[in-house]
Amino acid sequence: MTIFIGADHRGFDLKNKLIEYLQEKNIRVEDLGAYELQPLDDNPDYAQKVAQAVLQNPKEFLGIVICGSGGGVTIAANRHKGIYCGLGFDDDQVKNMREHDHINILALPADYIDLEKAKRFADVFLSAQPSGEEKYIRRLKKTDSV
Image 1: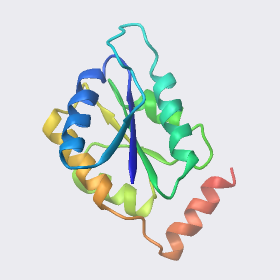
Image 2: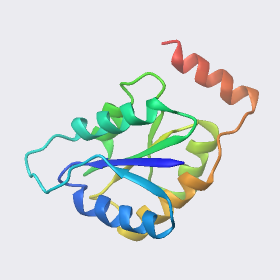
Image 3: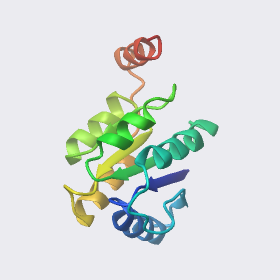
Image 4: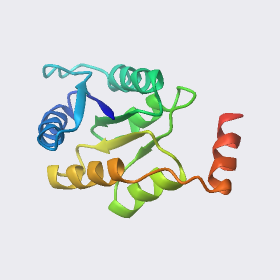
């Protein structure tokens, strides 16, 4: 499994710390930027890079995107068909999104969570598996048909 991660200036510090944490756990992480703090950068640039990377091999690749509110990267990532990006704010909610909604990208709100929460959310996201239950598959098909 490979995790692609990207963040704008507001998520920059959290991204770098989260990468370090994931690498310490021997998880393969690909940093898609920002590579330096740029106060005027735009979060859709990084969310789109992560979404495009995940789409190269959706069965093996997952993503994490970070901005201040988490909303901007969520919206930008979800513009790509086949991407299911959810904004994490609670351990159980992240698990539910991964299992029931099949999210393949987790969005994090750097202005509203600390590193410990980000670590927990990442752990939950990476350990949970999408459910094969028919009702969840049916819902994904409906989402993809719009």
